[in-house]
Length: 136
Image 1 (tube, helix red, strand yellow):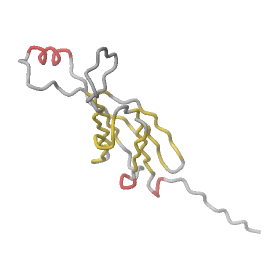
Image 2: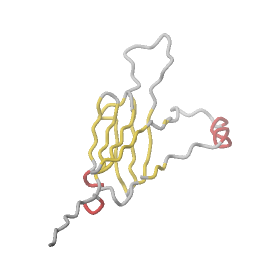
Image 3: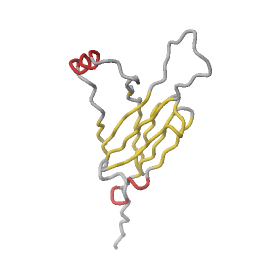
């Protein structure tokens, strides 16, 4: 499974954005969530850290063998913070899936800020044991 991520703007693009007039909204910022990928006999398991994300603000989709994880963290604190060292941001990451992954059977679970995706292999890609007949 090869990873494809969104390109970051170049320095010239960043400077061009800085010289534009201020808009009515701040631009959305995305970070790449850290992931772990494990290969199991039946497929792959991908875990991604997405703290502050709820089921309602999580979008996981597959389109043309491209797995996309996009999530928005909850930015609404109960009160205005007096001091802040950590701010929740939005997440975005993409992976190119091989033909061996059965995209129709992908399942996802979000628990305590950890997204777990199960990417099963297609039947033809799964290893199978060949029985050997004993002859006399």
